[in-house]
Length: 103
Image 1 (spheres, rainbow, N blue to C red):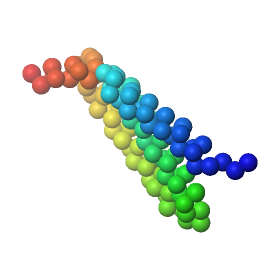
Image 2 (cartoon, rainbow, N blue to C red):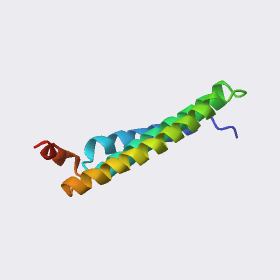
Image 3 (cartoon, helix red, strand yellow):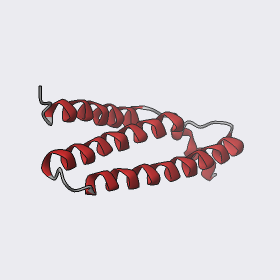
Image 4 (tube, one colour):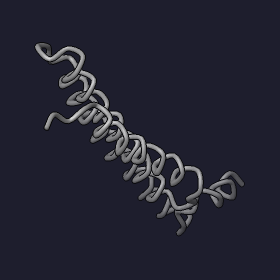
């Protein structure tokens, strides 16, 4: 049985939608970061699937997804460092409370 693109794109759509919902509704910066990573992983799935089905002899989608994984790792390390510094200053990582730090 041959798997079509739909078998990969539907879970990717749900992953991306869950990431968007989590990013919009959460106030905790760690939860927002996890939601962002979920969205990036859904995009990586799309890169690989479209590469496999549209251009099976080329590896551009694979390279884009590997590059995206590297960028996501660097972004996560930087975001966690920022979150740690915010926690040290404010003793809270609630994104809605960060406006109090301006004063």
